[in-house]
Image (cartoon, rainbow, N blue to C red):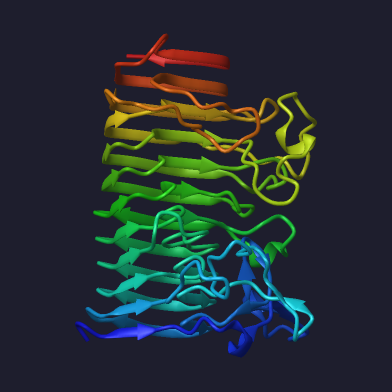
Length: 396
C-alpha cells in the first residue's frame, strides 16, 4: 500500500541462503538437463543469501503497489556496504555466500513488478536469471551514489524483458544486461534477447544502460528508446574482455531518441574491462593482437540514433575493440554532443592504461566500420576524430 515500507533484515548470521546449481535431477532440471539453477552471483553459480523476494521456478506473478521495499543497508561495520563488502565468507557454514539482492528470480515466467520503490539494496536491486516475460513498470530504484555494486536492474540470460517508465538513482550501473560467464554450463547461460527499455529516467549512476560485462551467452535484439540520462559517469556503455567467449556477441542493438545531460562520457565500448580477479593480467589487458580462440568475444553491429548529449566532460565517445576481434560496425546517426564549460578530467573507460581526459572528441580503436551520419561535436579540445586501426570511416 502507499506509505507502507517492507524492511529487509541485514543480520547475515540468521539469513537463509540458497546453493548455486544443484545437479542430479535426471532430466528434470532446466531445459531438460539435470541442472537446477538456484543461486548466482556475477555470472557464476554461487550460494547466495535469500533476497527479500526470492522466486524460484514461479510463473504468473505480480508484485505491485505504491509502497517501498527497503534493504536497510548502510556503511556500518556489520552491514553490507562496509569496507569488507567483497568478503562473503560465512564462517559458521565454512563456505562463501554472496550478498542478497532485493528481488531475485530464477527460471520464472510471466512476472510483473509495478509501481513500488526499491531502495538501499545490499547488492544488485533486481536480478532475474533464465526468466521469460518479465516486466518492470513504473518502479523507482534508489541507492546512494557511493553504495557498492547496487545495480538497478540486471536481467541475465532472460528473454522478452520490458523496463518501462522506471527511474534509477544507484551506486553502480542503472541497467546492466548480462548472460553469464564462460565457466558456467552453456545450457545455463543462453543469450539475453528481446529487451525493450523505454521512457526511463536514469541519474547519478556509473552507467545508464550497460551491456556486460558478464555476457558469455551474448545479447540479441535490444532496444533502448526515449530515455533521459543525467549525471551518470557513462551513458550507453558496452563492457567486455578476453575470456568472455565466442558466444559473447551483441547483435541487433539499437539506442534511439535519448537525451543526456552532464553525462561524463556518453558512449563507451570497452573491450579491456578490468573486472574479476584476472582482469588486470597480460592476457586481458594486452593491446597486442592475440590468437582468436574459444575465449575471444565478438561484436555485432550497434546503432545510436537521435541522441543529444549536453555538458559532457571526458570524451564524446571512447571506443576500443580487440585488435584480433574488431568492433564490426558502429553507426551514429543524428548525434549532437557538447561539453560543459567547467568540464573536469575523468577516466572514460575502466581499463588499464586509460588516463583521465577532458573535452575529447570521438576516440576509436580497432573498429571495422565507423559510420557517422549527421554527427556534430562542439567544444572539444583537439581533433574531432582520434582514430587508430579503424578500417573504414563513412561520413555524411
